Image 1 (tube, rainbow, N blue to C red):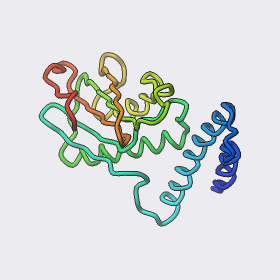
Image 2: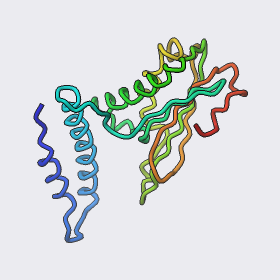
Image 3: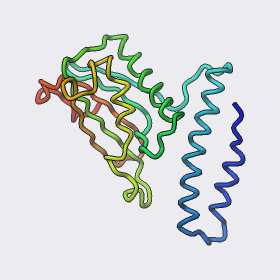
Image 4: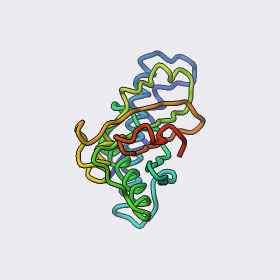
Length: 193
């Protein structure tokens, strides 16, 4: 696949002139181009992994741990917003989640008749991103869809519930805690992994 990264970077540069004459419309266009560039970079990287000779992961180190009642999967990126969710970004997230599940499978994967999934998203704090960051606009379905059939049967209300928590931090990350819904009061879902 040929992706012209230089063209996207050049267009991005055109919308961020150095003379200080930046309009709101230019910033909106630069933001859209940044999302496009992210997707293009992931595509180019995965092409080299899938069809080339680069046998490594894309970004960061996923991890998995388990206490008596809670499985915790840690992804080294904040969960993307729905507007950022291109096919490539969704595939990237699916791969990271399944890599964390594979790590957990070495010690066993619990199955819950009804599970509770608690998602804690830590987002890097930057200027004015409090205006852009909205918990309900996160791509929660990417996580839920990749857990069903593994930890619980389906993502309907009979088999799972979920909650979302967000915080500011230096580094972005997403912690996914899975526990038995019926023992929710006993679950340590609000403790760090």
